[in-house]
Length: 300
Image (tube, rainbow, N blue to C red):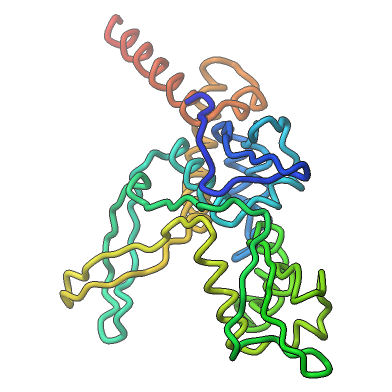
């Protein structure tokens, strides 16, 4: 499959205020498939940046697209691109086996769904920053008791994910606090407030800010719904596109090497030439070669 063009649900606003949403996305080559299959950092967002940097060829009028910019893309935009990349690599259909999440069941359940059915919500306001007002009860108090309710924030991006992802499993509260500290741009009259002022935000204030962030952000609904045939109960479990996609690439790594061997053996192409091809092109050559070998065998 050749490059595809899609539109981000959020978009990147550059320093001049221009919004960039149209993306030209190239399929993975064999070399990228191998790179991702070798990645072992569970929960790390760095591999997502690495692979999107290789496959995003254009963002609006920006080309090439450097890794630093890919890191600054909104979380939902990166999720969306990862789903698109999985689509052009393996197709839209996803099949998985999970355990029923009900504690008294736990039986294996087969899940089958299409990436095209995943709801994507475009953000109405494109930022890059948003201003809200805390409730009186959640107002931030200054050193002398002043109440500040105006909060300006930006939405979390890939760089934020890379920084806090290593903390999520061990200390989710600290990771959330760090994420807010990175995203809050102004409290009352103070621009880029320090840790001391941010530390005065109450749990209620943090909740209100998080809810407003979710309300204005683009969304990719990453929840799988199903029903357990064993216990008959419905359930919903999170779908992690990174773990799914990278897991599929790890599972198909041996097949990748077999395809390289097959084409190199018959066409005498170098490994470098074959690994530069996307999966779809390798498969087309293999189909043509298989048909030709079958024709020759029947002709003998």
